[in-house]
Length: 224
Image 1: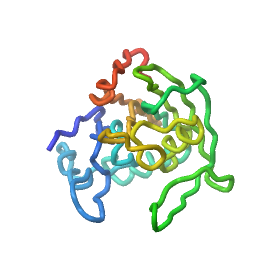
Image 2: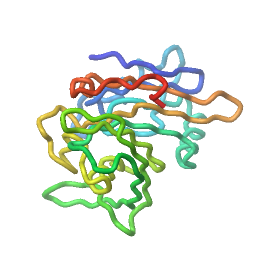
Image 3: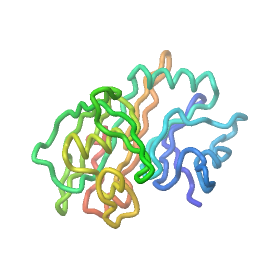
Image 4: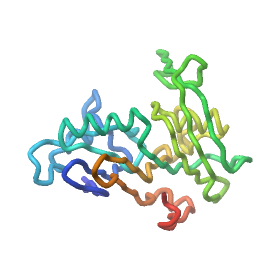
């Protein structure tokens, strides 16, 4: 089982580079999860750290954990108040005509016996905003930087497919599986401001499967 790389650590919180394929919560049917490995992340503290937010199982990258309930409550509030700066990298299954823009599509959850649940654009859904820009192109695909203002379930995946008009590569719900091991989405950077303390800042390196598609890791000056 792979080690969990720590990107940021202090007495209040830590940020790990969550591997693709590892769910945050234990699946109903059982199996590996971050929840089952929290003991590895105590790092000398008595309490188990707790995830402040969630990433899809397929999504790799920056995941913030709080070391105690008081800090968890404070960091949750920062997310709720939209104070957290989140940056994602995603590979689109094509190249859009526009090279940057903002998608503003409210999202609602629907479900059916045949397809299970998914998120769809809906006027009466929850407001959702994502800023995006193409940062590289290779082999007929675009590497896109996403900066979501809101944190809705599957927000970037739906905004890519329905807003930009091209789904993320190998997205089995909003696009096509396309023979890759996972949906190509990576939480590349996270900044969380704190009162009377330096901000939490973390950067997760570009994963190997992105590099294998022909995309070079961004230079440090471009990563944020």
